[in-house]
Length: 107
Image (cartoon, rainbow, N blue to C red; front, side, top):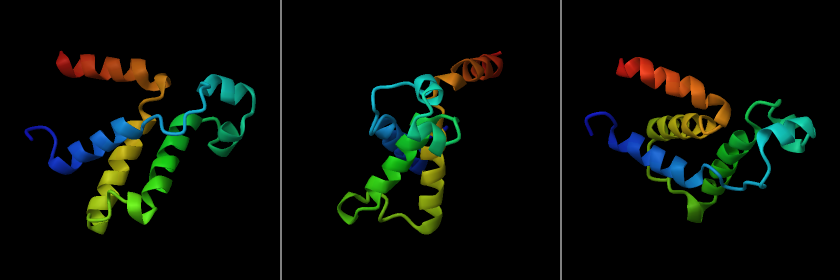
């Protein structure tokens, strides 16, 4: 609670659970080089991670699956923003810049 509020922790838990939902077993580099539908849809930028985000919120739009249904509009917006940011940052292309940023914070 010192660093993250309960809503942020909830969003990160959902993100961790769903960060690979619908994964086709291919990597982003292959999808881009093969001009795969996902690479075309997401303009070659983290096609898998963008698809995982979209799939998460598609699944949650079903009434029986809507784990965000009790949130206010503002809370939902914040949770959605956190989920998208967290899932997009699972793209390996962000790994080394994030490690460098954490190292700089540590120093």
